[in-house]
Each structure stands twice: as structure tokens, then as C-alpha cells.
Image (tube, rainbow, N blue to C red; front, side):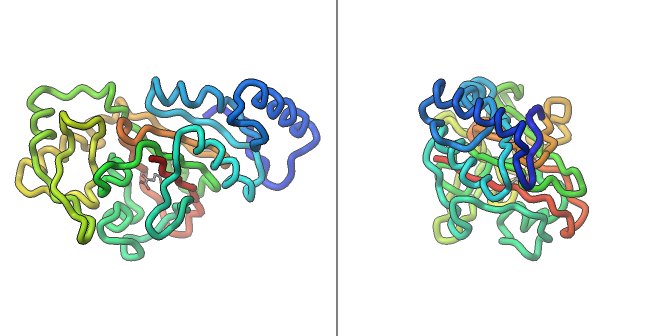
Length: 258
Ligand SMILES: O=C(O)CCC(=O)C(=O)O
């Protein structure tokens, strides 16, 4: 990703001038960013996410200010929805599957690669956008991968399979039946953690989205401290490479937006 390097402890004087310049520039060009912390190309983010389904930027602030800077970016896209137990900003770090909720992807895959999925697929309407930010890239150099479904070609038979194969979407007493695609909604619902096929068609429908099939179309996000990824969760599937051990310090912040 292109961007200025993260400044771990202090902003040197030269950077401070650049940052003051950028602050003034953003205050002039986009009133929603007035008084906000410093990051580059934010005024383009909304149009880039609209056209491509995802966008990246870089925040050059001290680690302790990342949360506030991320709030500014999040507010460009909508209302932040708190995670049921972890609040408005979740911290994602490597965990073994037995440390996690069994119907989450971490509960199912632990440190292994995460398959392509939508976040909050267990909600009746999954969140529209996700913002991920890197606090620490970790030692394994684990990438996030993206597949934009707006440019992924499925045959008519495959679309029918993904539209009609039924799943139970597990969410405790609020569990419900659903499908991966539907002509009556804009979003794709895909999560092997919470979606259980009710017949053999469901397994075939899941296989349509196996990562191996889409390898040549995947976008890879290689993280550096301060990198931020915004994606349209209704349109772009995401996954993750494997992580070597729980000692890996890879740490991402995540926000989900209505
Ligand atoms: O850790 C990552 O790179 C992505 C995280 C992810 O896929 C998720 O938590 O849903």
C-alpha cells in the first residue's frame, strides 16, 4: 500500500509541517474532516469505495491516537455499530480456535487461513461497511485478501444454486433460514462459521466461493502500521492468510458500519 510511514513514538518536525499542511488542506476541501487527525487521501475514500467496493489509506499518528483518527474515517461512511460484546472498536489478534466462539470464523479456523466471507452474516442485514486498521503487522506478514463480487463471474446455474440452496444461519435464539444470494436484496451472505447447509446443495453453493477458484482475482492487502482498509461488506468478500502462532503480534482494529 502506498502511504507515509507510521510514526511510532513522535512526529518529527519535518512531518509536523507536512501534517499541518494536510490538516489545512482537508479543512478547506472537506468540512467533515475539519479538526480531525492527520491522514492522506481521505477526501477520495468515499468515491473510491463507491466505484471499486474498497479503498485504502494510511494514518500517520501515534498508536494511541489511531482510535480517534479511525472514528473520523468511519464517520465518512455511516453509523458505527458496536459489536455485541467487544464495543465499537474490536481488536483482532491471533487466537487458537478453542479461545473463540465456535460459530465464529476464529472458532472454526483458529490460526489457519480464513475463507472468503462477509462479516456479520449472522445479522438479518449484515453491516454495510467494515473498516480495518493495522496497529501491528506481526511477524508472519499475514495478508488480508479481497474478492469484489461485482467483477466475479458466475454462470446462471451457479447463481441459481447460490440463490436457492438453504442454510440455517446460527445466531442462538435469533437463528434463521437464508441463502447466499437473493434477488430481493443487494448483499451477499457468506460465512462458513455461522451458516450451516441444510442439504447437499448448500455444500455445493459454498464451494462456488472457495478461495482457490478465485486466486487470480484476489486483491492482497499487505499491512503496515497505520494502514486502513475500508470495504463494502455487501459487495466485497474478504479472507485472511494463515498466521504462524499466537505469539505473532499481528493486531488489527475493526469497526462495522451500518
Ligand atoms: O484478520 C484479517 O486480516 C481479516 C479479519 C477477518 O476476516 C475477520 O475478522 O472477519
